[in-house]
Amino acid sequence: MLLVKFLRDNKEEAKSGLRKRGFTENDLNLIDEVIDIDDRRKKIQFELDGVLSNIKSLSADIGTLYKTGKVPEANSKKAEVATFKTESERLQRDLKMAQDDLFERLLNIPNIPHNSVPSGTTEEDNEIHRNWTQELPILDASAKPHWELAEEFDIIDFPLGVKITGAGFPVFKGKGARLQRGLINFFLDRATSAGYLEIIPPLVVNEDSARGTGQIPDKEGQMYHIEKDELYLIPTAEVPVTNIYRDVILKESDFPIKMTGYTPCFRREAGAYGKDVRGLNRVHQFDKVEIVQIEHPDNSYDTLMSMLDHVQGLLKELELPYRILKLCGGDLGSASAITYDFEVYSAAQRKWLEVSSVSNFETYQSNRLKLRYKGSDQKNHLAHTLNGSALALARIVAALLENNQTSEGIRIPKAIVPYVGFDLLN
Image (cartoon, rainbow, N blue to C red; front, side, top):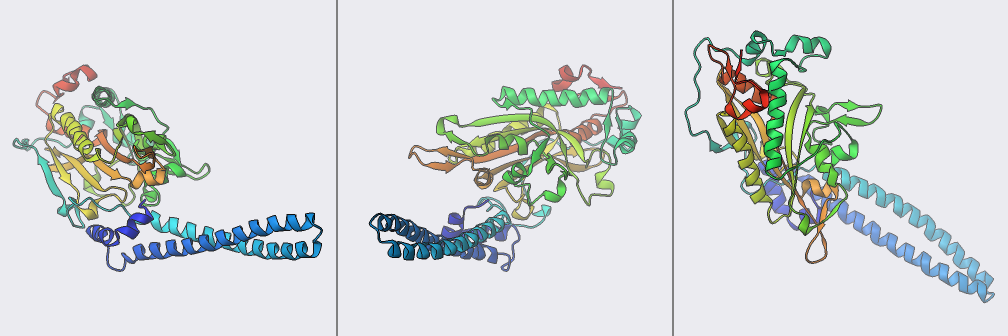
């Protein structure tokens, strides 16, 4: 959530940034509305402070008047106090309405994109940041997509998942389950070796947590909602892990805070259908290892680059062709100031599959979370939050199966052989 002061002091910059996201001139009126509501809030607060000051002054006078026997004068002032109290109650109601209105408007203004974010409204406007330097793998005509390989080697059962739950909930078994578990441990080991503290968080969160990281109201329709308990299944470990530091004031010496966590993730993916969502391409439940950092604002963009290097290193070890895209303004998530997407090449499907997003949210999440640090000036400042998938398992498995199929079976990359216990899936 953006600060009103930022919008007030940088109105044209904010409008320019939102135009990158595809905001129309009419949409941009929201910024002016926020400033107007804040002006009204300040006016009401000023009036309320004056009324409360009058009540305090009159109440002191009343005590003195009673003590000196001036009862009529005291009673007259009591009547004045009663009138002021009625006025204060009205002003308090008006103040709360203005505060609530301001909060709701701010919730619906996305983050301002970083200056380097390209303009654009669709994925075609994204820029390639880094690219695979070798030739992309080419498979012969007999190559199979991963959903056929999964059936042939009996490692992932899609129909069984439909029977137990519904479409988008695959069942991994045998060597498929070992491959999944081995990849999770591989990603966690690489993260902890890089200094990330492993966290096992809850898989459900309350509304405050979902709002704190920006899932509400932006992605509310994509989360599974447990209505009876007012809880949400997590769409990513980013939500519970980042919320560990909600309402916390850090010291500068605490930075950087590095956390990693493996969780199943749950996404409704409403409206997804067609050949592009077959097999593991788009599922409702998938495993993911997340990396989260909380950083000093001066260092967050260096940290972002180090996180990109970390994810890139994983893909190199897995021997998967990859590319890194810098998302355009219209393709950014609402909370992000800048996002880089990692895609791996699926040779059998001849398409790129997104497997990671690495983002810097700057102060957007921390303002919602009230996540601050005490600076050298002894004042509280908002920290920067960052996160990235390292990595999302479903599409990684899809690419590994497809790209490594041979006449003898599916070759396992050397880096994960110690984690799965076999070098060939046959």
